[in-house]
Amino acid sequence: MGHSGGQDLYRAVTTEFESVMKLEIIFISLAASLIFGCSSAAPVAVNTSNTPVRDERAQNTIAHGPVEQMPLNSNSNSSGKWSQSGDPIDTSKFDKAIVDAEKTQKAKPADAAAKTALAQAYYARGFALTESRQYASALGDYRRTLNLDPSHAEAKQWEAQIISIYQMLKKDPPKEGEEPPPLPYQKPARQ
Image (cartoon, rainbow, N blue to C red):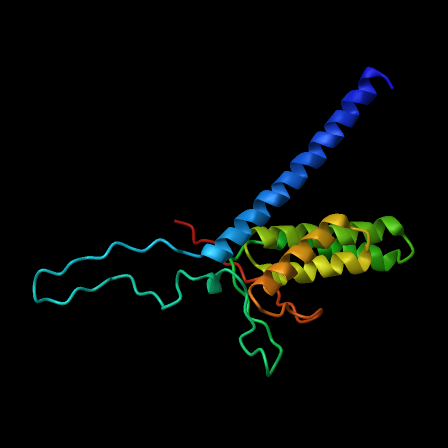
């Protein structure tokens, strides 16, 4: 093996290591945020007068809890519908890539490269949704990826991690086909 081959191997191993480390960091951060939620208490104002103290920021009673960070089944025993949570993101470039890959795959159903491209398009959107804490939607994209490419290692890993988090929270993950779509994204108004 020449000098160039050694460098290529080093780059490949380094890239794989960095990918694994990034996944581990994201997973650890995700788990920590779900476990600890917003554990720091807000400063308490002491009222020395007889006038009532008001907090001008209205918040619901669970504004800082882990409920906001993990999608919950709002009607766990009845309709099977899943509510969505997380941060809305612009998925339009991912959606377009999926639509384009679906058209190519339908035009060439026997083409393995077209099937792999569609799987990768779903995986890319799933990863973006994971980063924005839209876990139930991401789970759907990872499952679509695995239906197209059962050997997709990263999709398997993310699916397992999201399911294990649901289990840790003693919640059932959405069943295949029940995953909600990504949260709608509204572009900020121009100023």
